[in-house]
Length: 230
Length: 226
Image (tube, rainbow over all chains, first blue to last red):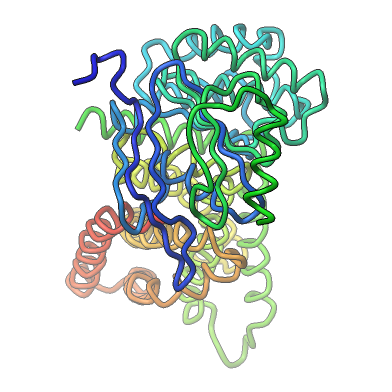
């Protein structure tokens, strides 16, 4: 019997998702614990985003199960779209999210979260007026506002310049160090390799391999190449 | 119930704030209403059709078509940046999300109607003295139902490629009962007919509201599942 600290925050068993005759996911199982970072890598069309949407509760599996330690409240999602309203300011966007999640004093919490991602000065500007890197930081602040125990990230570095990517990586590392679990979906393992505790390769909807991270990125990439190209 | 209302009011306030900032949809809907009234005013053959005969239909065509334009923006703003995912991810009742969108849409459509009614009086020279209360009551009863239906269809079509085209095609057939009822009530009010002739139509409008608001509250949550 695992202790509460070791119990999975998010667990899936034999997930399968069909779209008509096509099988987007086949027998995918995953167990995510506090402080872990699961890197999910795969080519385009492998089913990565479908998996993340099922983990978040935005889509249902055709079969298999998903267990979240505290229901949907335990999940924060950073997708490759920001989920923000361009006409609202950064603080208004976060305060609205806070109200949905029942966060006490949502506006004050929103300002504090924006300060934690280095955007206190830009909190009252419309999201539409912010750069791509800043929007990504606002989106991270929004995803973390209600204190989720698991953060799901879909290609979090796409479209960011090197400085913004570095900043995003540092923010995620800090959250991981604070005990938050990360599930990070990407087509480029190199981007987040240093965060990863586990690495999984998804090919045509099924794990080609899955488990604790390899010692070196090169070994992992070689295994990926072998698995995807036979 | 407190949680339900808290979420619904947060969603409605957010929608109204977004619209207050952009004003795009409100201005478009009001301009559209004014254009419809102008076109009907000048297209009417004065020798063949009196203003009084045409006025009730024109009023409700204007209200319903400009209402559909207003409803189109309801979920269009959730499509930008996939904001809808952010709403659906929250651990709240999806019926509360629907009710919040519904409240915002009601405020929006009532605003369009409040601007269009004086324009209607101006263009058609209709005397509303003594019947304004009846017209307003009819507008409220007709709008409550059709906005509920429109909100659900706007949510259904938001993920389709041609949402702006699909919404009118789907929602207009459902607008027939309230529009027919409202036209009948308005025609009788303008003709100075007794209240007894109107009461039946008002009951039909009230029944439509009750049935469709309940159905929409029940249907919205499963419709939002992928």
